[in-house]
Length: 108
Image (cartoon, rainbow, N blue to C red; front, side, top):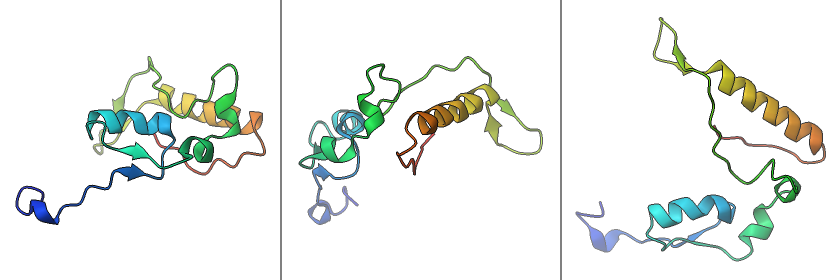
């Protein structure tokens, strides 16, 4: 659509959903620095566990998992049991360390 009808395309340059630490990557790499955070996004999206001094639960993290992916013979699904266990353990640790925090969404 952008190529066929550029006059119909409107770029919305303010994001209202992500913690600024998460929004930084797509803003820089996909939107050439033109996507900005709405006012107070860091305040609105920071959870108590983000300020933990050991930085165990930052807004996002890349974790290198040494496990292996496997595929079932009856379909295309891929799984990694070591990765799955780590995620379950992290969620358990997060919920037990911060019981008053309502964890409603995890993206993997």
